Image 1 (tube, rainbow, N blue to C red):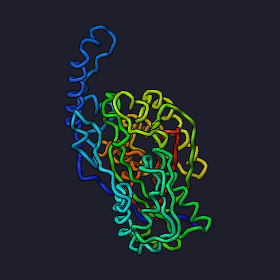
Image 2 (spheres, rainbow, N blue to C red):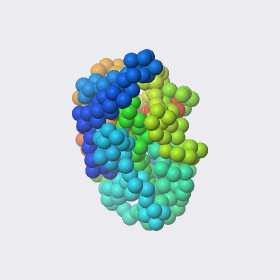
Image 3 (cartoon, helix red, strand yellow):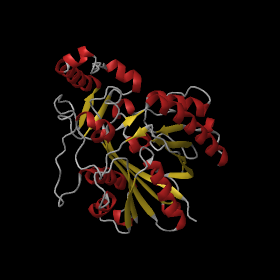
Image 4 (cartoon, one colour):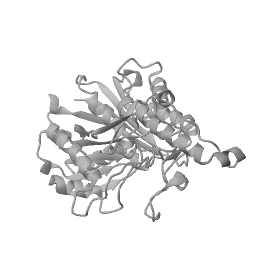
Length: 376
């Protein structure tokens, strides 16, 4: 058996940012037009009038202040209210693969070794733009990597499930180094006409390189992070759902889109997921001999400020100190599988050898994953 370490990470941030004020202005314009168009039905009680939103409501409900997106013009146009990303020819690299390659190149540069030394590529994400060929194989080709590649989807937990899968390949001797990428265009499955959820998601791509411990430097910046333990959990729930897939012949539009885009029962998710994840973290830590109060930092899935703060308090048994429970969703919003990796990528430089942290994800499924790491 071989010990696996996280050797390097990478991040691709899209070129456009949409503030809460911009998003709400678009939404409220749509609401005003809808209410005027359906004034007679609203008066007759046949149609319910839509309620406007505000930047303050969005920030209080989510902790989000802005989000990065691959296309802004379509999202902030009240007549469109969705990203406009032209379909590419089969001879061009797909947009998800292009994002993943950008994040992967940053990770490979930080790793300091040729891409050819990677044996496998996993594309672990919520939002796959096609069924096949796998985006992972496309990324593999673009980077000149041998071995094998495949896609995997466990919604917002995809990255931790991907790290676990990569670590298992390394432990069993099936690979010496694995690249795991998380390209997410979450704006593509978001209903921008839904007051309760139109602000939740952003777009991004992250990358993680996992390799054998004996192949990584024992000390210094390249020593990486020892993976102390990984644990996965799933429990079926309809409270977070997206029904759009290859059996749907047309893109979802109008009111018919509600069931074919992101939809959730937010209050139920909060009540059920927070205790599930908190207990899972505590049980996993106890089983591998880690005192959760000794964790220097937690890099949780960037779901919602209220969920993250509650989980942080339950795990630590107190209010987290500044920097202990990393929040990046104010700038990036919810980026599904990539959120915990963004947090880890941006806030781990100050760790001394021997200090421990937790990468944790949770989301639709329900699914959850915990990865305890120690700086080498």
